Length: 300
Image 1 (cartoon, rainbow, N blue to C red):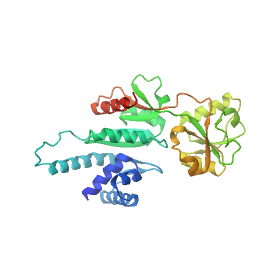
Image 2: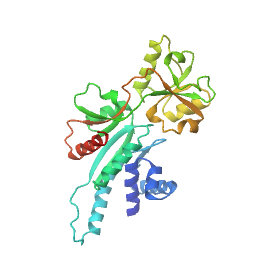
Image 3: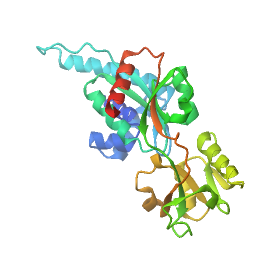
Image 4: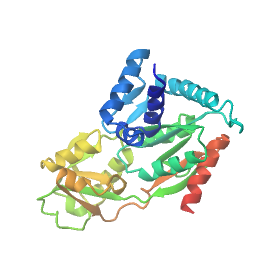
């Protein structure tokens, strides 16, 4: 087992993505992926659960990360054993962060990197999850901090939240669709359209909201397909299988060109769809509290 591979494992765990970790480490993505696979084969467990666009630590991976951090700390202490300056006495801590899959959360990564610059002994476990799981996970301790749809925390006195990303509903159209020249659409104009929806368990808020708005405008939604993720929905839209709903926070500006589609804003959208960073108030972890205060200060 190589020390460099252990360091690679930590970086992949922090980034939640092989490509981002490879860029940070200045090595190729295939090389990094192979080294992690070799490590998993060596210890006989899967350290990561691999999704199409992201990674999450398995339960074994979370245990392994704590031990690896301890090993790397000890190695660092040995390296500086005879330095005149004292080695920092700060203990390794793991902060568990949950976030919405498919959303463009580059700002989240930037803030974590900035925070870590002044807290070098802190490690982060980043996991994509559904809105409901993020909300429940914050309450039951599965997550220390989450980035989730603000509406999931309405009415909860134990949750402190801060607005993080402005977010509203959009609709994806085939490039040659009759509405492709429009800058905005309203739900009434979708009466004769066939749509593609995310599976309700993936995002019950968006599904329920869309169905409710269509009913409000006097028609029942014609859903052609239910998909597991945004990539699947936009791919189907690009070949004319229906119109797909998405949030503006998922749109990094490249989706229209990537899938050869047109993305249009929807009018009369709810004002409660923004992304918030949220913390469980009873959480007494001083480091987590400090991180949340750091995020709040950035937006105040």
